[in-house]
Image 1 (tube, rainbow, N blue to C red):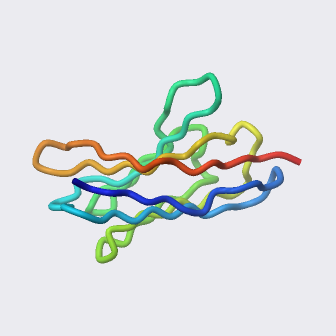
Image 2: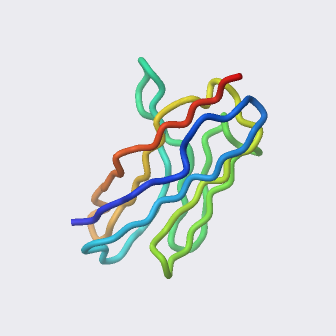
Length: 117
């Protein structure tokens, strides 16, 4: 089993910044990707960004240019720097990892990000 623990959520004003962190522990094995998803009230969970073990990144169009994902392989951790936050970024953000060889999904419990004045 793999455990994921997120931190860094909170309340921020529009235009502000937050940094989310996620640390993986347990029977990690070989991690293929680490990433972030989010789920706003009444909406489906959606991909925000992911990063591969080699450093390749992918972002949702809605966050490109504002969010940056990074990874520390030695610490089995992934980070999401969120700048220029908008009210529509309000959601519970979930850390995700896909573990080889079968790209099995593991999820954190989520951290709430609220963007409001």
